[in-house]
Amino acid sequence: MNEGIITLNIFNILEAVKKNIIVFLGIVFSFILLAYLVSITLPSKYEANITLMPVSQLGEEGKASGLGAVSSLLGNSSISTEIPAWMEATTIMNTREFAKKFILSQKIMNDISAQRGEEIEWDNLTEEQKYTELNKLARYWIANNILVEIDENSSTISFSVFANEPSKAVIWATNYVNSINEYMKEYLSQEAERKIQFYRERYAEESISDIKVSIVNLMTNAIQQKALLSAQKESVFRVIDPAGIATTRFPIMPLNLAIGAFMGLLFGFISIIVMVSYAQYKKLHF
Image (cartoon, rainbow, N blue to C red; front, side, top):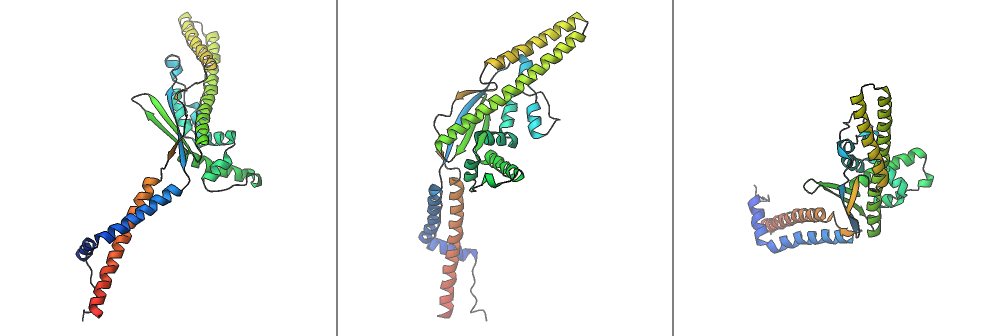
């Protein structure tokens, strides 16, 4: 009754794979080769890397800049204010709001749109549509165009930018770091000025001489910090190793090869199963 039924089990399949190992491996490596060819024919991605080191501020008062800038960008007023300026700037690097500011200031909307595979006619969009598209570009920029890594052992920060042209990768990386320094320089200067004004008011109200001396010391520190910010170009990040040459990067190569290997194994087993089934079918019917 069961003579016409084809039966398969894992042992049949494994035995068939062993007997046809050349065919099986040929299928697997064919898919891996196909994945490799697809990867190298895709548009190249270039990486520009900058090594940064936090700029030391004046004393403990200068080191704690507060998270006011980050709070304003993230819409969070409850964040702790005791944090070094370079950590604050590193956080801002990865905020969508700062990414939008940078994309707009550099006029690279079309470049980022092209990277996403979409051509956008900005002149034909309403203000609301432009805002929506800019949010999408900012999210894409953060997820696909920048990478920030902190090395606590060497106290350095590795900042990388990716682009489809080497010159753009270098320019974008350099300008992004400059933008962060300029933004933080303005913010820290305003913070120092606010402190100076506050200390002046407290000094005028205070009558105890010892407290007045302490207030003067604090105000002197804030004045020195503001003067230092005005004199130095790199306010929070000092460039140790600039983005000189962009290198080719294939971030999707390992993923594509893994997918190719998986598909090769899958189709390899399917091919063996078909071969075994056909052999049994011939044996039963012929």
